[in-house]
Image (cartoon, rainbow, N blue to C red; front, side, top):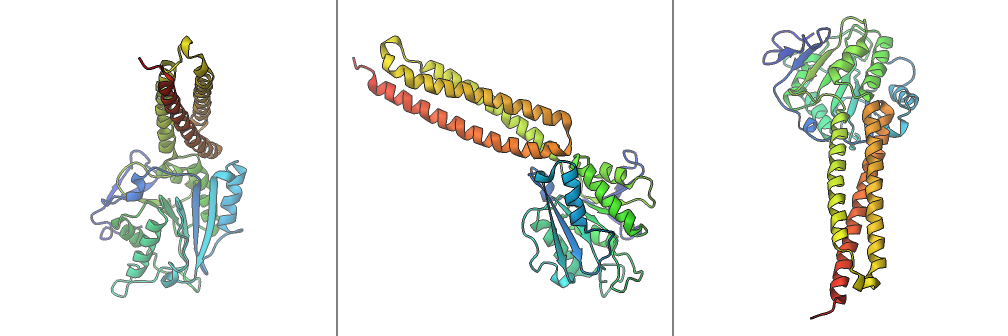
Length: 339
């Protein structure tokens, strides 16, 4: 646990909301958390050579868990191994990763303070987290190269990262066995895929293990995947689409040809039928999203990604219908007799 000197300027909080889990909050904001989440869920397993583990690789276990939850298409897991901290950014993944599982081998000490990590470690990890747009990280206990016990510098590292605007971090207790660490990582990942808030997910995943993990976080409440926010934004866009198609239907009706313009009737009918079909298609998208909202299960996020793509195609279809209506109006105007 961090001592009072390290925690100076930071506030412990959330004891009433989640009394079992200690949460340390910093004052610096994390820019990534203000952005709308994106799908699919992307996970980076960052593994230092020599770091211990339990059983199969973490990346393989998380991939298997996603498949068991029927969300394989909605989750992407990538493993990146680095030899030592100076090589952390060499050939590091540059794509977006919502979650970073860090398995450090060891954290080298600052030459002036053995309780602090070396400054370049803090800077390089902060840069990597920013580059991949991580929404949070999970940090396993470090192990010295020779497997011996050593000073745990993770609290100082995570506080320094927060001070630089880094995302939240879950610190797994150093006292846990490799098996407990592996079980916690999987359980946390499952709760996160159910879109649980990070503090709740960590507390639930810890179960009755002691000591408990510590959560380090910037201010605010959007900690976790925050996929519910993406769902709400999608529902808002659907409602806006509904308003747009209703307006378009009124415009189509206003452009209906008179009996004297019977030659224009087939073209107008085709446009009207397409707009009515678009209205029905939007209703189907809305019903599917309401089902996702009711379920709130991991598989739903895969379906949400498909629904977002469907809505994008629907908007393109509506734009095409509007363009065709404008063309019909121009043709009708040109065909109209001049007085």
